[in-house]
Structures are given as structure tokens and as C-alpha cells.
Image (cartoon, rainbow, N blue to C red):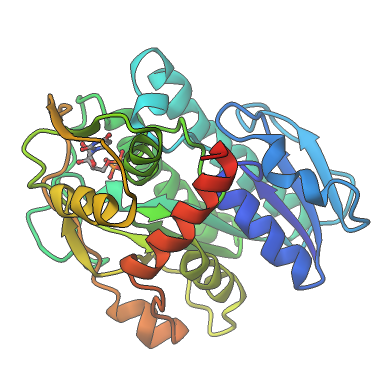
Length: 314
Ligand code: UDP
């Protein structure tokens, strides 16, 4: 198949490109490289089935090759990169980006998968979060550019499905980590591992009692492909995440146990609207896709630490 991956040089996108190429597909990787890096796909650049287009999804896009599938991943996902003076750009990337990709999907008759997010649940009042929970997002807070942008993108997906007949799939991704993460991305797993490897302080925001459920990248990529290729007409949205739930302090302690270091735990202010708990209910993914994560945090952290050791030369 001919497959377009937007956000293809980012952490999740690049891992997906590698899987799709390994499965024998032709992959067009599209990115503006704002948070992604060509380093993540350097080994694919000479592959006959791989091509790269430098493009921003905010702008309409013409692709000459007939497309069978579009995975829309384009959007910065780390709070320090999507907030602040980038926040308007983030909303545009979510909303104009999916509009442009839906138009492209319509033109090509391609199936399109939108990578939505657990952020659509905001500060959840239901725990764990099932897909039918409608969430508790602060629409005017500093995370809203991302949360509401992704919510609007879901809305557009379903309107193009209902009114334009576009073949859609929607997944909601929970916190994911693994090789090809950017060491400077600012996410908690990459921060803690890189801080420990460099002997720097481990920065816990707030008390560290907030929880997250961490999914290893290979589990996510498997779930994405299963969702895209399901032929039962299941459009979602479906949660993809690992239900193993940890406090941020527990994560820091796990990292410290695995990396001999002089690093100490230090507290930093908790960012506004930082969700206090998050855990996916993955019953639906099990029923519809026969999918469940297979790699526990303990094992995934070892693989990720090995990746960062090599990347940072430490
Ligand atoms: N966090 C932290 N220290 C860091 C980076 C993040 O304590 O150096 C916290 C952050 O406040 C949040 C959790 O870890 O509660 C997950 O943050 P991340 O940015 O990885 O993901 P998200 O907030 O989008 O779930």
C-alpha cells in the first residue's frame, strides 16, 4: 500500500514509518521537523520504498502518488513545545492540519487515522477513562490549544465520515515512551532518564503524586496498525495505552534504581492544569482489535535507557 505518515520524523511517526517499511509498504513521510528530526529516519532515506516531504500540515498539501492510507500524527505533543508562544500554532496544526488531511483523504479515497489523545479527557472525573467519558477539559487554560485542538479534530473526522463518506479511524493515545524520543523533548520519561544519565537533578513537578500510565512505543504502533487495518468497520475512538498506573515519584524512583547516578530528586512548580491522574480503560481495544499492551514499564524502561545511553554517549 501507499501510506502517508504526517509527523513522520517525530518519535511516534518515525517508529511507525520503520514498522510500515518493514511490512513492505511504500511510505511517504511528511513533516516540518519542528519537533521531529530527520535523524529519526536517516536509515530509511535511501530505502526505495521511502520518501520524505518537508511540509507543514497547516498548508494544503498535494500528493501525486495515489494514497491508500493516511496516518495523521503531525502535532507537537510535549507541553513545553505546544504551549506558550506556540499555542496558536498548535491549534492550527490540530485543526487546519486535519482539515487538509481529510481533504486529501477524500480526494484519494484513502482511509485516514487520526492520532487523538488522552488529553481529550482533561482533568478526568472518571477513572480509569473509557471512550464514552466526555472529559473535563479547561477550554481557556494553557493546555487548551492541544486538548481542544485535538477534540475539534475528532469532531471534523466524524463530520467528514458522516457527510463526505471518508473512511476514518480515531485512536486516543495515552503517555508513550521509548526509542527515538527526543532527549530535549521535556516529557517526563525522557527527562528523568537523561537527567539520571547526566547526573543532573531529577525534576519532579509538584509533589509527584500525579499519576500517568506509560505505554511502550512498540505496543502503540501495533495498536495503530491494527486499528487502521481493522475490516469490521470499527472507526473508534479507541484508547491505546498501558493501564499500569504509576505516580511520577514512583517513576523517578524506578529510574534511579536502574541508573547508577548522583542525581537527587528536586521539586519544581506543578504546571497549570496538569492532570492529577490518567489511566486508560482498554476494554474496547481488546474487544474490537484483540489488542493489549505486552511490554511492562520495567522492561520498556530498560530498552529506553539503553537507547538514551547510546544517543547521549553516556
Ligand atoms: N513531569 C515531571 N517532571 C518533568 C516532566 C514532567 O514531574 O521533568 C510531570 C508532569 O507535570 C506531568 C507528568 O510528569 O504530571 C507527565 O508529563 P509529560 O509532559 O511527560 O506528559 P503529559 O503531561 O502530557 O501527560
